[in-house]
Amino acid sequence: MRTALLTGSLVLAGLLPYGPPSPLPDRLADTGGGSQLITAVAPAPGSTTGRLTWWDRRAGRWYEAGGAPARFGANGLTEGASRTQGTDTTPTGLFELPYAFGTARAPAGTAYRYRRVTERSWWCQDNASGSYNRWTEPLPADCAPGEAEHLIAYRTQYAHALVIAFNYDRPVRGRGAGIFLHVNGKGATAGCVSVPERAMREILRWANPRRRPHIAIGTDSGPLAVTRY
Image 1 (cartoon, rainbow, N blue to C red):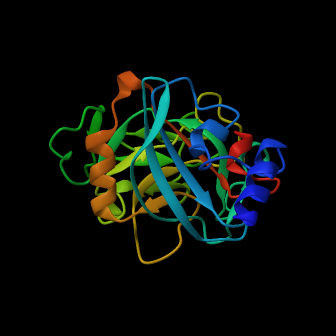
Image 2 (cartoon, one colour):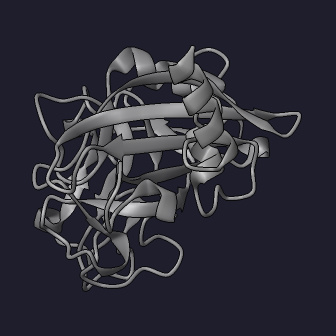
Image 3 (cartoon, rainbow, N blue to C red):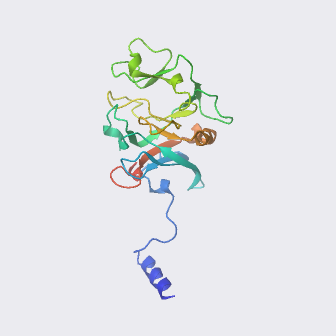
């Protein structure tokens, strides 16, 4: 009884929190202004695994809609605004999700624009190309094959994917290209965020572009904390 009274006094004094913690989206600096959000959170900058959660906002409150274990870059996470291409790091920040694609058909109920991958589908990562950080069909003459991803070659990872608009609207050369939310491969990624195929299919059935979903990527705490974005 005495312990309960002491705890109550500390709560009233503002020294202890009252009730359960607020949902993670409530603690972010920005959620993109929509009513759907995905958070991809790692324990620390060097982590290659963490947790992905998708959220719905209804009647002014955020509710968890689903979650799955996530994988990050082989060299962990880094600040998106200063990332260097080829470092196998996942960029942190808040990003739009322009469209979906896949080597497999879109899951039933997918509302996003969904591009099917074919033998002609490439993602250009050549810094000298006018198609830098863009889907191209076919590969343009100014994009070297060794500086592009032939999307069909990743049938498992790109069975289903969402484009993460990192360095996308106004690409900065040398910052990075081809960052996606996609299906798990054998291990850590080259900078993308990946989840089990079941989860990726669920996300595509859930995501509605009219609700302006974004993805926030970061760590639990510290200089790369997801709450900064």
